[in-house]
Image 1 (tube, rainbow, N blue to C red):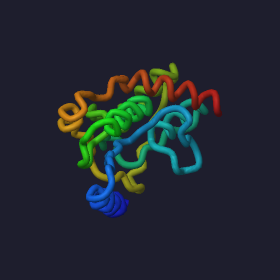
Image 2 (cartoon, one colour):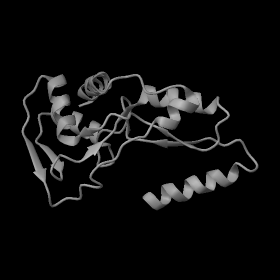
Image 3 (cartoon, rainbow, N blue to C red):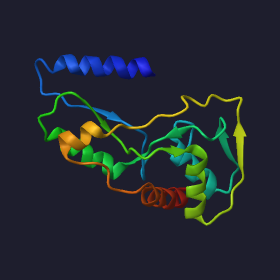
Image 4 (tube, helix red, strand yellow):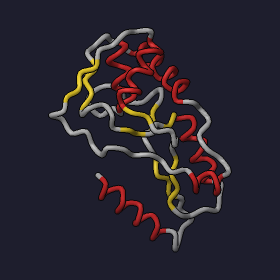
Length: 165
């Protein structure tokens, strides 16, 4: 997966010799209208679905692994600004707020008004320990950073998924 992303980024960079290409590096984009079941969903959607349905909350790993999550409206705004800029190098589009997966589950449970029990499955892959979006360049180039707080984006996402299930 990582090699595919790196290869495609290098390919798009080479296209910059002939075309005005923009390259965005997306960091865990979530929100309404996204996949929320079937095994291909991102962790915010999977947790929203499990909590909305009252299912057991299984987290792969110990729950302390960290990620950053960017709400879809912020992603669209970032892409819009990037496309309307002259910047032609790879640019991170994502939140720089680092959140543990256990914390993410507890935020969603609070939004739902439900008490949850988390079961950690340490036999499953947990991925890298931590991953975050460094937005230093984004702030400099686009004079912008994501605006929608995680709790607000998760509330919108949870309410949409709750209606679907």
